[in-house]
Figure 1: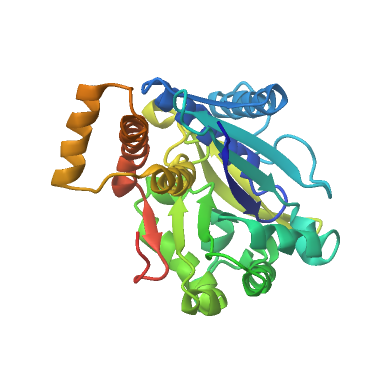
Figure 2: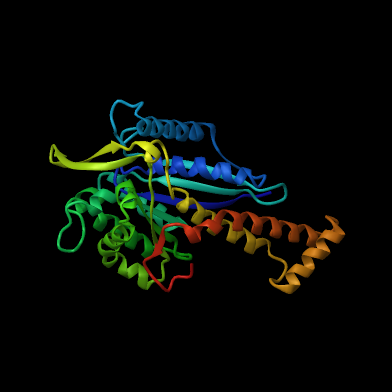
Length: 338
């Protein structure tokens, strides 16, 4: 059975924590789909790297690492990195392949293959823009945006790249998701609304052309580790850095929260596409009628096979996406179908 692929591009400044976010997403969703009798796997090399990243985050949160440094893993380079995952639902249903491509931050600054970056963005179904939350929030200016935001998150450069890629699109516009990472301090102190307001104040005007072209654009905020909070901001060699402290008690330890939101949205898009491709029955009363008929005739007809595929895919989709309503997710364009 052929596979259905969804391409997800991850953009953002080098060292913002894209791989750490991916490691938390993968660990959580893999356990969840197992409850449905499905498998969610990656290659051995990919799985090993993400597991090592997760262990590093756990060591930081529990005090087993010597220093608190969230810029983990390989040093930023100029090569894109590809992480491929496969959701296997059951025999007879196409495997759903998700290819996450992490683009180096330098590519958007003319220091690498920026033309290749924009080509890949134009081919994607989902674009995840990782945003350092503390740079948005600390030492705000008159517009309600942090002093170091332009220097750290490069919002204008990133958004201009998105707009150029948008012009090159040949298909439906991709979902753009701004993920505010390292947001523990603000979520623990009931500043979630203030955090999203800062993101909207910064990125809203820059993506106005994309909103007018009906791109679905959303924002979510995550606790990448959970047991760490920003303590102070300092400059070193002309660059701003955040110093983090470990939390104690019931807030301590490795407790990532909301990190599965981006992956749930990806699942929603990918599964809905496969469901649409396999749909052979109407919704409502007649859909239920044909499902009963399928159970009666078993697997003897092609119609009954397709009905069973459709039913199983809907079950998986509903299970993986039902929690989105309770997650921190907000839309930049209110008219977007959610």
